[in-house]
Image (cartoon, rainbow, N blue to C red):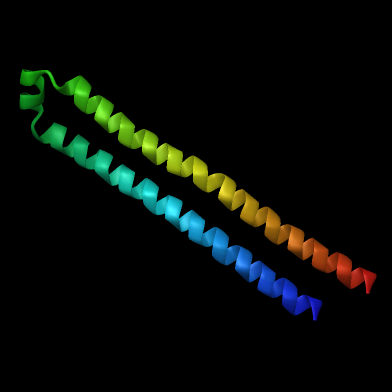
Length: 101
């Protein structure tokens, strides 16, 4: 009976952690795409950017998108670490219970 409970617990941990990891991953990809569109726009009209002196403003805008991507990546790593640690902990608890019984 304990074995089926541990399988269900592991599946719940994978589901919850996977959902958060996918959410942060999508957030990072969206920010990266927005930053890429800013860079593409600047490179497409580099003469205008140089003529009007908007390079620094656009560079800061691009940097904000990259910081957003980094933030999503940094949030994703602890979630993944906790998910893996919980799964391993559940497996070891299961082994301990099996030896105890």
